[in-house]
Image (tube, rainbow, N blue to C red; front, side, top):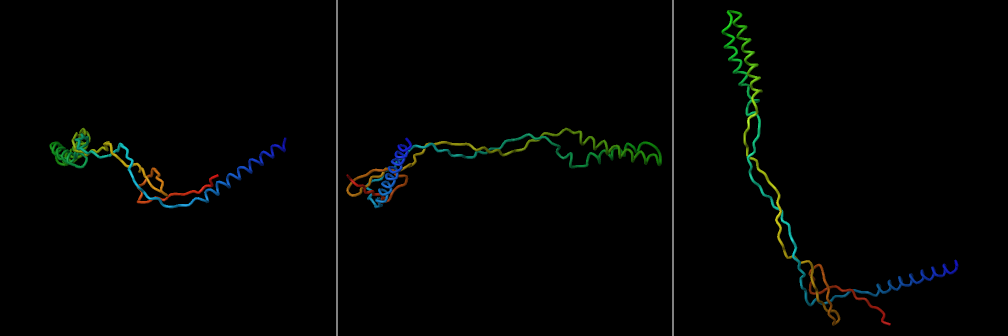
Length: 178
């Protein structure tokens, strides 16, 4: 039994090696030549093409914030002046000076508190907005070429990706006719 398996394996190996050698020899007998191009016709297809474009517009946006409230000391200064004037009306001599100073400090503090108590004001500002949109259109595109060529008096047809010149390179293979 082992002997039959070994003989079969040997036969398969020998046959596959023979086919490989034969195929290698056939490939070696091929050569390259040039054939004359007779006619070229473009092959076209309708293709949907996407074209992105940008569309921009101006919108008015409402924002909230303190206009100049945080950048100025006017409320504190005004509060100090009013507080000093009110404090100056009380007391005599040295007491009047202390009442004026206390009124200025208290008025400045009240002005500071009032500045920060103001609600944020609404104001409008222009803002440019842009969006990418897509436009589609159908377009005819060349996807290949039908080529008619002549070699040794015979006419052949093929399809090529690129447009050929006046001649094309062909591979010629010689085989044994039995």
